[in-house]
Amino acid sequence: MKRKIAFSFVALLAMVSTSFAGLGMRYDAVIFDNGLVQFSIYALGTEGDKPSVIDGICVQGGQGVHNVAMPSAGVSATVFDTDWCEPLMDPALKEYDTHFITPPGGYIKLGPAPTETIVAWNPAGLPEMNAYGLPYLSGTGTLSSAQDTALGFAADPSGQTYVLQAVTTFSDAWYGNCVLTGFIRAGGIDECIQIPLRIGPEPGTVAMLVFGGLCLVGIRLRKKIFSNR
Image 1 (cartoon, rainbow, N blue to C red):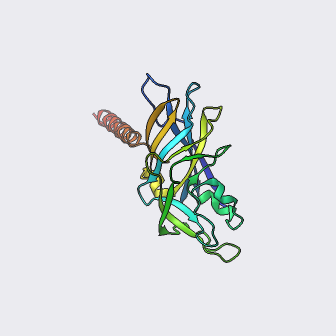
Image 2 (image 1 turned 135 degrees about the vertical axis):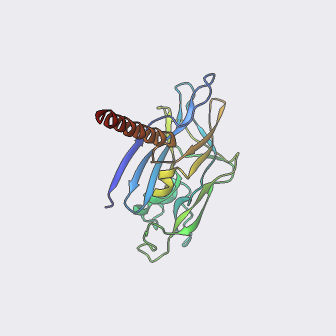
Image 3 (image 1 turned 60 degrees about the vertical axis):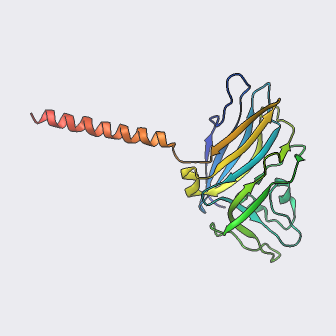
């Protein structure tokens, strides 16, 4: 079993103005030892306005998100969590696939289904065939849906609903090159989302660490100069 290190990012990643209820999305991350990082993405809302629609959700940029699909034998691309119920899909590969997580009760599709692409082949060295000798497609690409291609669902009583698993390469996750975009809706509020998916420190944090280090060096040099007088 592959070793995994879990990181939790619980900070709210998107906010609306104070005149509205807070809507946004947050994510947790798991780093795999094959160079991939899995993000579990949640739709968030306040007690009065719990999210019930995601619209135009896309994850693009960098090398792209990692997708696993089996285009043969009538098995569809794994855009939705329910596609992994297919007996020909190896459940061990599910954690490396970018797809929408099906909430209790499922989604109401208010337009065409989202789509995914695979453009770079198998960077993580995953199995290329299942137990029946049928080929997988595995690699980086995109997960996208047009604006107004909304997915409705029953709001979770907790105010947050697990809606998306996104998998990227470690380098893209470190620098936040892959960006989650789209809209989240609740109670008549429509909030725009634009969130880099990252595991590395924020640029501002890096700058502060560098500045702090330079200050410590300066203090040490000053003490040395005065001690030699």
